[in-house]
Length: 73
Image (cartoon, rainbow, N blue to C red; front, side, top):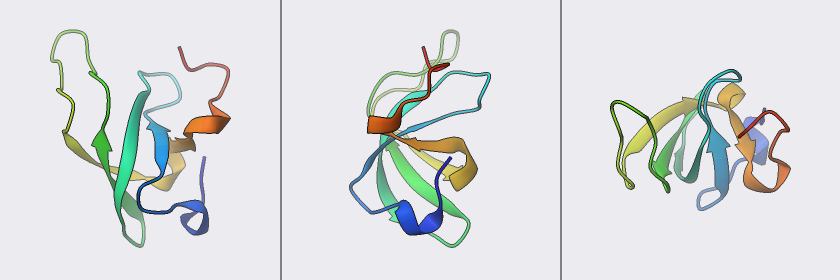
């Protein structure tokens, strides 16, 4: 989990739900409650999302890429 003060544009982060799929992305915009993140790897098994898709993600569902939690597979 990250705080707004920790997030910078251009930073690599993992995003996703704690019990779901995690995806690598790059922060492209920081808003008050959420960030815009550009997806850097394919995501999804049945409905795949291609690289370059932009997601709006709350800070509570993001982790710095160098602090990858143990349960991310």
